Length: 257
Image (cartoon, rainbow, N blue to C red; front, side, top):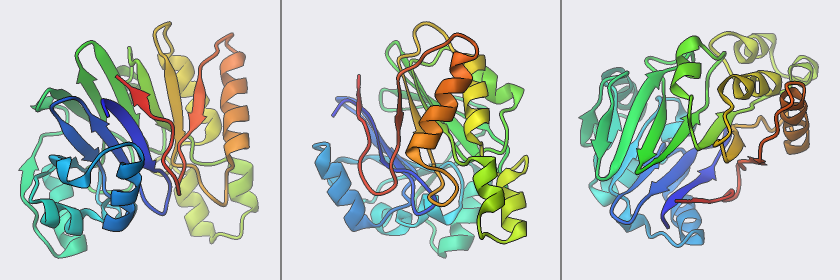
């Protein structure tokens, strides 16, 4: 498959496939090896063809399957220095790291990546833009708010995978501990549906083709609520976009290059 496809999205595990004719990588590996094999197979990709794993940050829902998959395939794990330290501390293993510098672009095969800082409660979390040929994809979740840097980096994307984690009223009415509620709603927590819509308003342009709404909370959001709130926030500015939801337990809509 030449394109990208969310394999899992949410607090139980995250992973995205990105591939071209010559290069195949994963962004995050937060699901088990067996789940990874099954979900890649659904899009016609063999796990053994994966050449690298890029990691956004060291939270468990992004690295749970990393040790087994990286060890089995003997492939590099691309991360910044602080995230690499966090991975080692969390998993007690040191894969074959290739260290990138946050804010500096790098190439892997025929893909060009730009890791940029996002506000989240980890050591040095990043989001990515990925470029192949004339296409630009923005992959940005696990951020408490949209900084000016985030908005700048997500300009002129052809496709976006963007967090719409929660509806604040559902967070407040949930049974979650108050400390967790404050973390989710805080400036280093997760992006709400409305804030996702506002970010899309800020980066919208005529060539933006599709947006995956990602990392939805199982308890404090639903697909229908996320799609409705984001759509209405866009419509307030007279904008329309093709939207879909990235799912936790199944492969989501594939985007072909």
